[in-house]
Length: 287
Image (cartoon, rainbow, N blue to C red):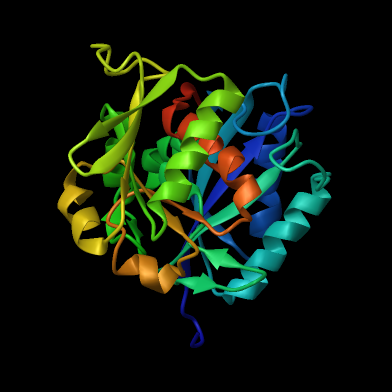
């Protein structure tokens, strides 16, 4: 990064313990004290907790557009410092917290290693991230998919929530989905359509396109050509162990990359589905 060059950043805020609104205000001040210029802050969005321990309080979510002359690693360190100053405790995954700051975008950077993933790996299918982000940065481009944030958000609003799972082992995926339905006591069924197994909700005939808990369909495909044939209708692409560079030439919309161990797939998929459907309620409060 050359001298005097500033990078536009998109930062997600979340919190559901103590006073998240006060924590957000303090985070903005703390960022600016560290030389980060905060340009816009979204409205506050209240959403139900997704994916973590049960019985959590609702989250306050927001998005911050900022600019910085710091390098990416320095910016990540600043966010951790602000979290620590706000009393963040890194305990249960997706658990309650006073403050959570996620770096969603850092210019057009695509970086993936053991310690860092930018753009944020789950931002593309999380309504509770994209709703506030579109308040202040709807035209920003997510560099892996090449889509702007408003386009990604609109893909999640449309129903049904069709997902396409690209795999080299369709039998394993079909068996996994069948077990998931049984284990979670979910009201879905597995059917056949064309060449691809499908899992869909029994309520697929629902006409309420905005209803939370709307039906979704997962199609299992074994080749890139078949994936691309369905890509126009895909609301979430599901991939196994692909790098961001590989995804950049394939995913054109929201996606979930299952890089975790297979025993974590169920939790990842269910959390993704919840996040796709978890539309928040915006307040009129704005910093």
